[in-house]
Length: 143
Image 1 (cartoon, rainbow, N blue to C red):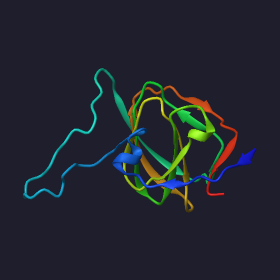
Image 2: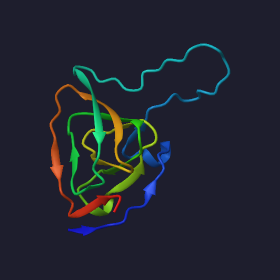
Image 3: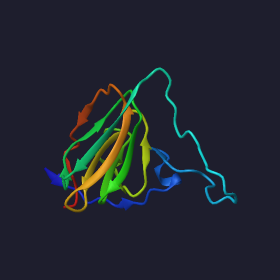
Image 4: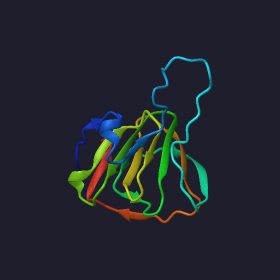
């Protein structure tokens, strides 16, 4: 299986928009002393779950998708790379440094690898998730 070097992108609203969104509070620096609250995403008619992922893989050769579920990836500890693609084409795979919490769009191909020994990630998704896997024929990660 061939290895392919990936450019690592920074997670910014404009660069990550095709894949999902950043979990943050817009205009947080606005003046005031009151607490700020905002619903970031709401899905009707579906339960949800919170998971904790300890990533130890340095290299992956497959991506997964969840056709019916949004999914958050929220870094807790360590550093990780997030690989994403909207279509099943190796040339569409993008690599982001996962240094901000994000919400992935439904049906987005994705996978994560640790940059150090391990990285801890909090995940929120539908209570019942269908997984589909794709092997693009390349190794992705810290090669």
